[in-house]
Image (cartoon, rainbow, N blue to C red; front, side):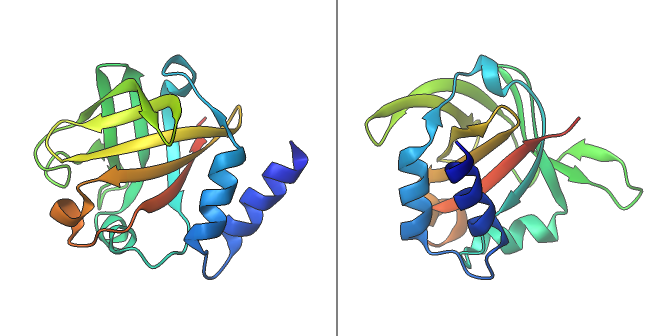
Length: 156
């Protein structure tokens, strides 16, 4: 497990993360259940140069909050006043839900946006850290077809 954590930390800290290396790490991680991802999460991404990273910086993305499988808040942002809020506008006017969904031959917890044609798939680095891959119709959502790689840490 330490090897996986080391690889994750190195890719997270890298000035430029190669999607091939991120895919290799993803393949080695364990799947996660919907119940395991419930709660608040602090988020960030890997430096792949994806447009979503700039968009999330602009809206001051803090992370995600999963209160229940049908009450997922994908874009918890920090307002000018420092308060956290669910940014419905940036999410296309909606929030999300959590489901067990097949991706790359495995079933894992996946967040399905209410109003955007994309999915966030999650796998476990450890009990308090997740790796995520956003896929779907990314060209419709962001104007680019490439997958978006990100991470979540429990926001205690």
